[in-house]
Image 1: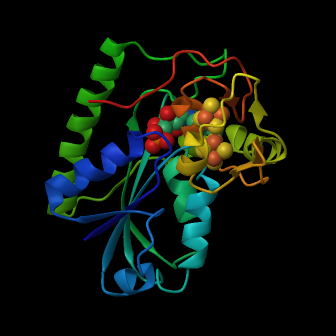
Image 2 (image 1 turned 180 degrees about the horizontal axis):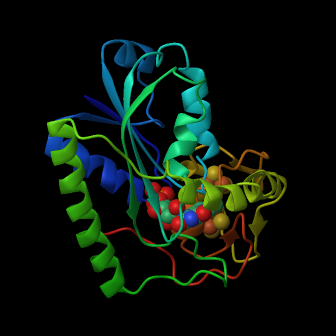
Length: 250
Ligand SMILES: Cc1cc2nc3c(=O)[nH]c(=O)nc-3n(C[C@H](O)[C@H](O)[C@H](O)COP(=O)(O)O)c2cc1C
Ligand code: SF4
Ligand code: SF4
């Protein structure tokens, strides 16, 4: 089995790797440059893991699915999403990227993980104790998921009517948020042009040219730069003052 994941700040990477550890699946970040077509063609079952943004799939993951649309036809797929609180139908949203019947979803699960949005006053950052609690709970959920998958039990979290209703209310905000994030990235005078954010941005959105940090209208809202900047000088998507940065650790 193969696992493809996208992770802005480590939560989804942790879940993807936990799954691979338990199932001997091979794990690939979609940011890596492999011949993914060849890898997909050789497998019958593929797993995907990503963070939920407004009950939907991050743009970088949507683009990955679109670029491998043909090779994913008739594959069995497993979907894992990470979320901080409410993910609605975040897993179903991935299946909905394909035409009806194109893929066969055999399992879908959501995992509660810590908040990584450290520049919005609305969502609090989790304490160390709470982070540990999230991890323990996710480990238990993954153990169950792996046992279910092994025994052929089908479960599709996020596909029920209640989840879809929640998604229905949250999802319309995503295109608006994506447009906003593409238009503007807040960079303060504290920026030392160290280049850390430039090298970690998954979409190469940030550029340091003639001693100025600018962006190329290509933000996938992952919050990686926000949480890695040593000066707390960059604030994408929500633009608030940077609080305690989120660094994933078990
Ligand atoms: C732009 C954005 C939107 C988000 N929207 C939601 C959401 O609708 N519901 C939720 O529970 N978590 C939401 N989150 C939180 C993340 O899904 C969560 O922290 C996730 O585990 C981060 O995973 P990562 O570390 O792999 O990037 C959002 C995060 C970002 C950056
Ligand atoms: S990581 Fe921070 S200080 Fe370094 S270039 Fe980016 S915004 Fe500037
Ligand atoms: S600019 Fe920042 S938030 Fe946007 S994609 Fe790059 S690293 Fe992620």
